[in-house]
Image 1 (cartoon, helix red, strand yellow):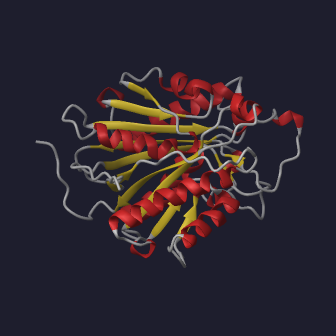
Image 2 (tube, one colour):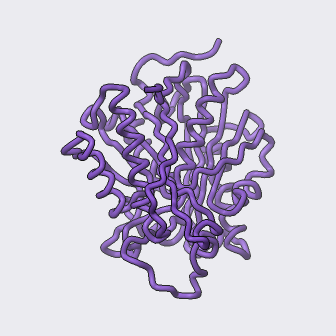
Length: 344
């Protein structure tokens, strides 16, 4: 079988990050970790789409500020969202003087961006790259389902699109204060399991998530217990259960260290989010708010992190087409793990 794991010669360092969120996100278990919060979800803009674009701009500005970097130092920006043609990314980041790569992986966009940025950073021409992603509950509902004003009833398997944005700065050179190193990449394969219900994205994404992790374990020879956590992006409660079932059916049993961003970002006993959170902003903020600080301070040393995506658009949903899923994986290690190689 063709190898799918890519081991970068230069292990990019995650120098810093910033996260932006809304009212519901502030009320969740990770609410205090956000850098910026607007409880109106509007971010001083007149439309939801402009608000999401502003979230991207704010998150990247804050990430640069926190790391002491300048926008002119960026060699590339990899960014994506859920709005048609990645409009939030384009309009939010158009003022940054760096080559722009608009990407779409649905809710897997964060790790897709990290993989592409890591590959770019193998070149001597790239030393600092940004990965930015976002989602907004009101833009997603307007595009994929019904405007929130409609008040349509949501099914038990549905998920709440996170209003959030995350920006990450990746460097080809080790620098003091780095949060983690990206030491392995596994691009996902799109899988279509025939799910057509856009209110059950966890079921659409779970087979792809299992395929990605199983490919890693089979090729690398490691097991879930070799890591502090194996993390999925936004399968939610429904998809997480299916994910573990698929692993067990393929011989990976008794997984005790799996966590899912969609199941973590909200308190489901207090918030009416049904199966959990979703959207590019789900993994985009949870990685930073929960996991990277634990890697930096040594409380965790190795994590397998795979953001998951339901590859659909408004037209495909209206036409009743099935929803392919995808999961892109990165292996994250604490900054001190192993020996860093740098370009001369």
